Image (cartoon, rainbow, N blue to C red; front, side):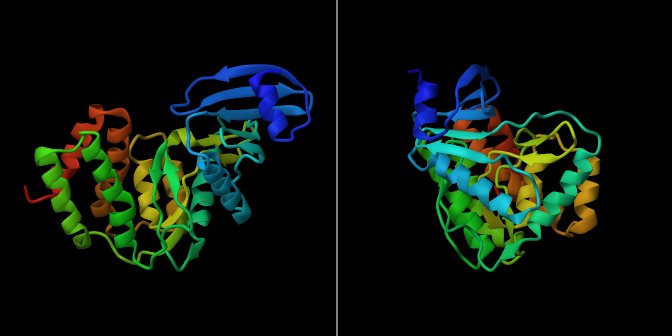
Length: 283
C-alpha cells in the first residue's frame, strides 16, 4: 500500500486512486493533484509539522466558509501530516478580481469584540501566538511583531542597528496604530499566491492564517508583493472606503510580513526591513 493509500485510509476516504501528480510552487508542504474514481482532490503532505498544523488550516477554511462570503476549498480529510481538499480547477477570468474585492470587503465587515483568536496558529511553518484582547495595538505588538523579533534574534537575522531600530519602532507604534480600528475577520496570509479563481470566475481563498484584526493589516500585505489589480482595490473601497491614516500604517503592517520572510528565507528580505525601520525609528 502506498503512502497516499495509507493517508486516504486514515481519512476514511473510500475511493480508488487513479493518478497522482506532484505540484510545484509550494514553499512548505508537498502537494499533489490526486485523480480518483470518486473525483479529483488536492493533497498537502508534510511529515515534519506540528500535530495541529493542518488542523489550524482546516479551522480557518471552515470559519471562512461559514461566513458565506468567499469560496474556499472543501475539506475532505485530515491527519497530523496531511490535508485533503477539494480540487480547484483554476483559471483567469476578467471579472474575478472585481468580485473578489467586493467579497473580501464583505468578509472584513464580519467583526467581533476581541482582536486575535481563540487558538494559536501558524504563518508559513512558524508558530504564531494568538491572544484575545480588546486592544489591537497590544495584539499587533505582542502577538505579531515581538515573536518575530525574538525569533530573528535567535536566528541571527536581527542584531546591531537593525535590532535597535526595531525596538525603537515598537516603542513608537502608538503614534501610528489605532488601538481600536475594528476586529475584522482576516485571512491572515493574503498574498497573491493564496488567491485563485475558477475558470468560471469565482474567487477562491486558500491557505488561511486567520485572526480578527485591523482590515488594513490585510490590505497592506496585498500591496507588498503585487498581484492584485486596481479593479480589486476599487471594488473593495466601494464597500469599505480607505481610511485617512492608511498610508502611514501600511509600511508598519508590511513590516510584520517582511520579518516573517526574513526569518524563513533569509537576508534577501533584510534591506526591505531596514528601509521601514529607518523611516519610523529615531536612529
